[in-house]
Length: 254
Image 1 (cartoon, rainbow, N blue to C red):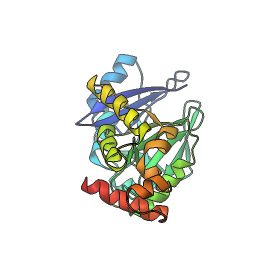
Image 2 (image 1 turned 135 degrees about the vertical axis):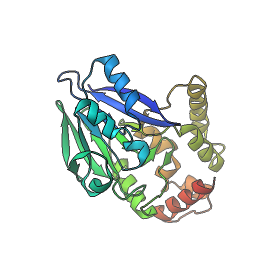
Image 3 (image 1 turned 120 degrees about the horizontal axis):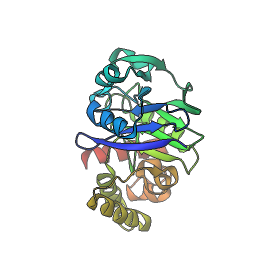
Image 4 (image 1 turned 45 degrees about the horizontal axis):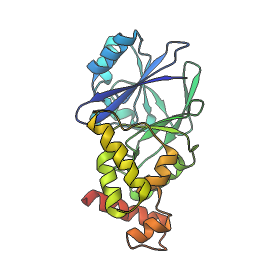
């Protein structure tokens, strides 16, 4: 199994180090800053092999150049974003695979938050590093793409095994739960999850990873087909895409 380490950065970002204990190969996912990553590498005596960027925003690529200078690692990101990913070495497209030691990671294109957004899925270990496409009880804002693009991207992720562990790039869970409960204040599982999240944050612990099964049950943006969710926002019988689009508008104003 891959080792996965959380690295908090900036206000609410998470970068990740993932390490193959057999070969020693290590990847940094969306390094916002170089120094925290270097500190964890030194602590574990790991050598950085790759940087895996999900998209071009500064809080996901800010550490690229300094990490390259210190370690000589290779930056992997979407080929379509080559012009705006610092230090990119390998450009990837939807359906491509990369190797981290013996572990295969599949690239899934997920436009919406940005046009070039991609995620990294390791089927063998059941891990998804999804950047800002999907959050615990939430989804990314539409900075470049359309609601339809993001909706289609989320449909892809909904097809993954329910036990998939989801590593998002921000600690947004508590705020997302408040929005979800504003829609369905009597939803039992949502209330239970909010209690768990509140306790984790009280102890300054991450609320991640979540699982796809948990998100399918409690994430409003993955329940646009659910009659209960449609009823909650006054759109009973509407097409899921229309429901999703309205939910995204509502969250933007929340």
